[in-house]
Image (cartoon, rainbow, N blue to C red):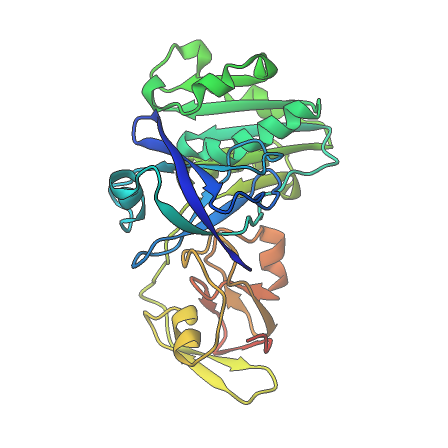
Length: 321
């Protein structure tokens, strides 16, 4: 996938610790079109690549807008963007990618955002409103100063469709999942984005309310590589090549494959973006990602080497690299 050079045209404080960046093409040409839910990789010299959702209306090709939460526990990327990026700076980004697409056949779309998770859902809300679709959005935050894009969300096109839910607000305006999730029609789809705890709470509540997993869509911004005391070494065989790579305890399969000279595409290294997804020919993966659905995991025909391991002594993977 080609990279794009863009210029920071504007930086705006959207909420406490949240800044938006308006990115425009330096050459004046139109940017690639994107679908709601898409993100771009932002590549900063000397820092890990990070993914940021596009939150402007998807029909805009003269700019991209991303929003960045300043996270004290981050690997330095969000802090760098907040403290060192200025208007006029040039950035290198990927073309848009989308693992969080809207279901076009949905009779009703329910959007649930927590904190910075509003970003991909804002682009979805813009698209759904423009198309006259039936949708409802609930945006949750700890306090009003942490609500981003409030001016946009208060526009007439979102009246009666977007609901702001504050933890420190009156009891009657807080999010009550039970009645909201109980109204489901068979063709309704649910989209959840925000902190991991928020996503897990909403998803588990939806499943308990009878929503099928294929109608529940999630987008994680960060994950973690789980290491267990019970982990052990295992082997990965590259189908048809005779090459066998040993993955040591405490080492990720992705690092082992890269060290062996295999060019495995990767981005987040945390099991949330899906870029390193690899076909499994034999063996049973130990899935530890936040990308695959339960049904996809049960097939055991793919795994994420950035975070997942093996339940069998050997995995045989397709020779894709």
